[in-house]
Length: 199
Image (cartoon, rainbow, N blue to C red; front, side, top):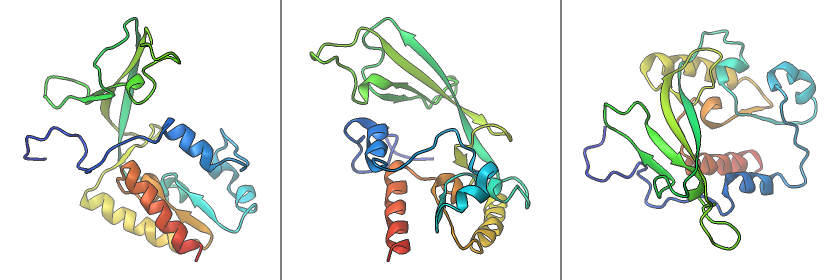
């Protein structure tokens, strides 16, 4: 709960998206590195672990340990995407809805992050929007946000104790650390982890 008239979704002083978007940023970071997609690390753990001295695991920490201590709880998100035959739906990348009557939490209009014009600077004649619905999480759903209550925090600490005994596995990110991160925070945490591991 925030008691302010500032309707800014984030509390950060500065906000932005990398030029070209996060996909281009990550592609640049991975340039020259072999990348395998569609591979379930947990199903191929032994053969993949054999490829390196250290492994960065960013999946759910409870899944890593086969849910041996029980399931951590998460919140999930469901998206409804729509292509509209108009150049502009809301004039903004994200509009948040906080009233009780609206079933979704925000609408994203993707073109306004960076891609709203064609190569000649004209408006693209169509737009894509995504309505974002907060949803309860159940096993099998994609986990998005950790549930920061006493019960889950206590269970995470038990999993963290197991993680601390894993010599070559580095647990990171929202799911590996069971911690809410905004993008700037996860990048800062990643850089700090690199400083610690590469010293």
